[in-house]
Length: 225
Image (cartoon, rainbow, N blue to C red):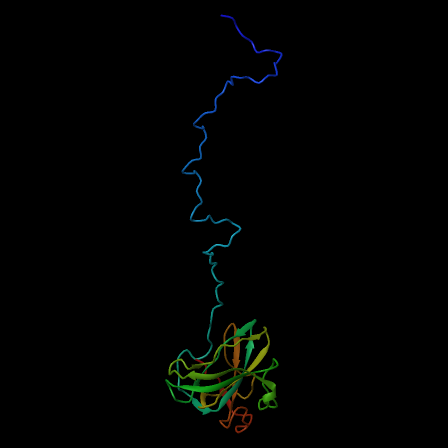
């Protein structure tokens, strides 16, 4: 049998007998079941916001502390319209609420006003009756509870270390009570701890806020709960 080799010189004539017949069944048909179907649960890429954000723990709140009577004590109480007193910060402080006792009317709510002296410093004989020297920081109604007293609404007063801030609480619809003071000066310390000094204050008459009825020498200790 002779061996045939491809011609090195093409004839350049189309063949009347093509060597390949088109297949009636193509090899690559589209698949009726595609391999990659779109997911009905889209993936969460890092550049898209999560529908379930991570919740970081909130910073812990600074501890609360109280300075004053730990329980109601009626010893030495006396009625008055309001009390003005000074607090000295022994380090930087934020004072956010004050407590006191109304004169009776327990388990009921009564109205009050609470002020701070606008400028830092102790209250004095000349400014304790001058409302223009004071700023209202809390007011409204507060329930008078027998063993825990009434509480102001929240406020924020910053007192730098070593400074003195004066406060004034006055009962509007009902007078308040406090303890008879033994001091004779706003420098007399009534109670203290590592945070602050609370100094002996002065009672004000029930004839309205900044009333002069008692004068400047009605010494009284703040009755905190």
